Image (cartoon, rainbow, N blue to C red):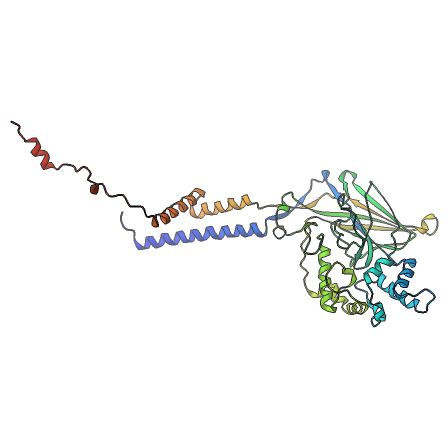
Length: 441
């Protein structure tokens, strides 16, 4: 075989190196896409077969203390009866605790130096919390149950949510969220829920896969007010195989994929944890709104300290709170609100709010767009384009490499050449002539 010119050898080595680099570069890019971004959010419009979610509702009383429970709580802790001159002082303290929220804690200034008030504020709030008296009616039978929960606006009640287990103020009986959230079929077009109340209450309407975000404006209803609210819903769903991916790869979490120390996951619960950690940094204690978090509970002095940092708490101290998006979500928006006041008659002593939800005609769905099979195909395409190789080619390369390696360490004797083993030697031309001229007598 003629020797190749050195330039030709260098040229081929360069071409093979560049082709190998190209195949590896493309393959590594596809591998990164498979690991970091294998999903896509698309728009669905096959709405005629859908069932859409109804909103979760969190209700907070305008006055979050019951008069009878207040008297019992003061007497049990400080042994003070209504006839005692100090009773008004302790009443102001209990009302301040029960009706306070995270961003309005200035009322604690009066009590910050009184060591006798260093009691369990959470238990105090639970003890004076009034019972919820509310009548519910709807366009279809709804298995709604009201559960007392703690929010950043104090003790409230929640229904039609699957994410309240960590903030519940009472022990949950079994898994009461199995049938939640309540849904409505598209054929109904408009589904509604009516809540009737006899006291002033604040309604927070939110996703059934989350808890209330009380920093947003509430819908306040009082006796003699009838409020009609029309809502539109934008839903996000997930495909059947999305759950098989890790939360990092799909860039979202399901409610049963709770963070450490929690029972459920939701975006708002994650933000509450961030605020709790910030409160610990600012004042060295945890307000009773975050009883489910770790850290020492705040005394009245600690609550007053937090009142000096309400702005930092509202914007998380300028620090980004990294919370994963929910895989299942429903966002409700008010299309219009209409109020009707009753000046007299039987409706003057009752207030009501009617929530009607329009059936959606589109929704978002998260699907896997880059499966493992697509990764294998992309690897094969890159190898075939740059190297002209296939799966069998790599098997052959590995086979010959192993054959060479094992051959180097093999101890078997090599077979001797045939000549050394006494093989038949072909006669020469002279011998043939002599034999042909031989005479026999």
